[in-house]
Length: 214
Image 1 (cartoon, rainbow, N blue to C red):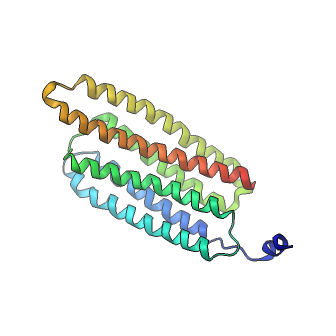
Image 2: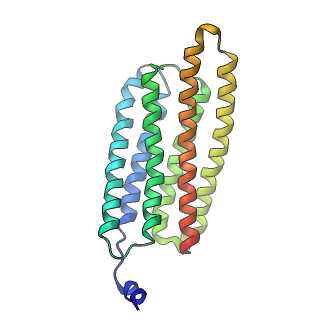
Image 3: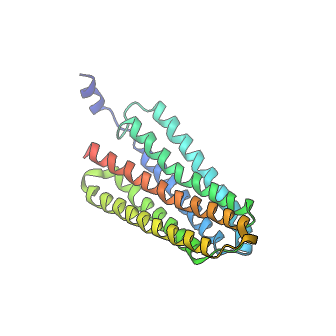
């Protein structure tokens, strides 16, 4: 009886708008972080924009959590709603950590592997932004959603290879007088890889939602 009543109640679909707004900030953060990896003065100029994007994304996350508590009928179960926004927020939180590490270690030069990792981050952000709005109509969009998630997974695999290549390059070019620089570069490269991993987590969350509700 209660389930029948819930079915008749209008759903609160503004969650999809909130996801879209959050995904937009993720894309902004990813592009600004990639710009930092161009090195030189770009590090200083683009760092504040990464922080601003993360702050804006946090604000959207808080809106989602509040809306979940106040909404009677949600488009899909509350745990999945909060799980997805949490996984999305993890990606931009990790961007902030990477950007902070770059500035903490005063890095202004980056090899091609760092920049390729930045490109992978931007690619994942774009794919996530494409996938999220499709959740509003999961049934007809299920195939496309799964395709986008699979693309994120492939980028994550490529990023693993880039990370390995980058680590080998760092090791081979490290001399005793550059050990501290090696530690700093290894930490930042690890941080960049973790960003892509967080996108993979978000893709897994999206696929789980589709499986559960289609």
